[in-house]
Amino acid sequence: MGVLDTRKTRREREDELRKQGRLPAGQSLTDEFPVLTYGPTPRFNPAAWDLRLFGTITHELRWDWETFQQLPTVQITTDIHCVTRWSKFDTVWEGVQFKHIAELAGMKPETKHIIAHCDYGYTTNVPVEDMLRDNVLLAYKFDGQPLDPEHGGPLRTLVPHLYFWKSAKFVRALEFSVEDKPGFWEVNGYHNYGDPFKEERYSRRGFF
Image (cartoon, rainbow, N blue to C red; front, side, top):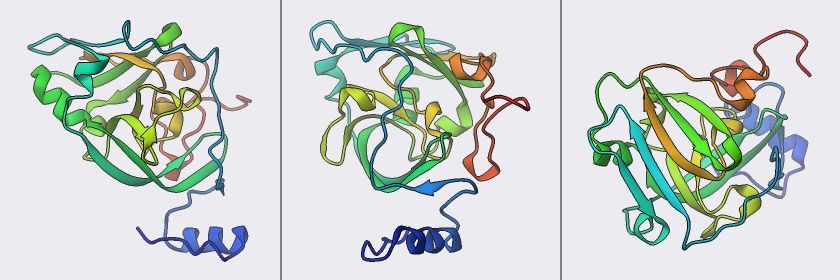
């Protein structure tokens, strides 16, 4: 992953990214970090927060905020792509690898999907093989700082190879499931998978 020359115009940088195969069709480069959230931003209370794991696992687990932060973390640099057509490059995140979480929970082999459950009832679904990639995190730092609430803090999933609605904000539970369970946006017309390089934005013609 090359570093962009910020002295170039945005159009020149976009052309460079397309040649590198990093900018999907229909996307535009942004240096900002747009905030797109359906519904209110939850208020974070560290004393009351917890994260629960359940479903097709050997050990159902629950962490409070202090304990979760004691898990080993990794830092990654990655590009992210929003279905609303912006892409942000070389973003830096820190968090716990999902595959480590799965190991701690004793994920059973029949698991096919991971369902993120978030504040206010939001859910989204991701195939388990996608969640097990090395760069898929439960992220709580962005650019070296605690993740801002408007970007999903204190904790969100980070699944950077899919459109960014699959990286669920305000995550509070992870369900390990044999069945696929499409979430809020998926049942309202978004694609069930969401590969930005295939422009898998919507599931039916005419949505939006």
